[in-house]
Amino acid sequence: MLRPGVDQLPAYSSGEEPTWAIKLDANERSAPLPVSVRNAIARRLRAVETYRYPEMNARPLRRLLADSLGVLPEQVSVGNGSSDLIAAVCATFGGAGRTIAYQWPSFSMYPIYAALVDSPTLPIPLDAQYQLSVERVVQAVRQSDVKLLILCNPNNPTGGPIAATDLRKILEQVNCPVLVDEAYYEYCGETALPWLAEFPNLMVARTFSKAYGLAAARTGYLLASEKLSAAIGKFLLPYHLNAFSMAAAEVCYEMRDIILQEVRQTKARRDSMARRLQKTGVIQVYPSSTNFLLVNVDKPDELNELLIAQGIGVRNFSRTVGLAGCLRITIGSPKENAAMLACVNQYTAQLAKGE
Image (tube, rainbow, N blue to C red; front, side, top):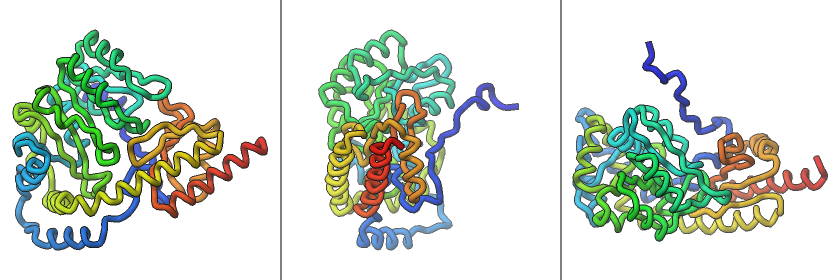
């Protein structure tokens, strides 16, 4: 009855627990949107005529993004989070016998999106410090006749960025379509966007779910050439983005100077937490250009259980291939971070006692 392979297809799992009082597992914004922004969203939503279908092509939002980013509206696609658009890109370039490659470890949905369109996958391993090798990527793409290369920058869940010089070298040496997933762009500041006109095979995906605090609204956008955007649009369903999400995204982008002040605060808290975790002497902290930290500990399950006992949720990646011993910790509010660090101190004390 089922399509062959569906029963073996893994379902996405975020590891979320509804009982967690402190959620440091999903890389969400560390604070609610400012009151002025929430009030502006509420006013905009009141004007939505719910008996009408939403603007099918999301022209106001696409025009707003295009004008700010220096591209044409025809080069902007919007969707239900950047994940919706990444799936459409995989459908556009993938298919039976058409290999989709990505760095690994990385976002766990990439192989699932590939499987949904019957594409073979080629995970390109990062090194022991989760750094990307340009030579390894180029060689893999050429030898395996890759039809789509996805690069997460900065990478999730490892947190590290791809150096701009390395990314450019890859673009100069591969001919297949390249999708750069910039979900954490606002925390990193590095982007492939300026090269869009130079490399017609380049696409850039971003989201409103992280820094913009619209995870509940599920809105993202994709930047590409007019030709690629038109092709990708064929895999987006009619009215795929609802009017409420569009309205909220428009307000947040218009008020981005206010919203993104929190990004600077999060980055400062991230760096402070990294230093404190590293000082324990028993936790390895990997460099991060995001709103989370990937850490490696000797007994990840024990630390995770301590956190859960205190109502704190982090993402346990210790059983994921390439991430043995690793937990991913979202940067929260100062109070949330303090609670998490208290559990870490308890963990290190237990290790010192040999427990």
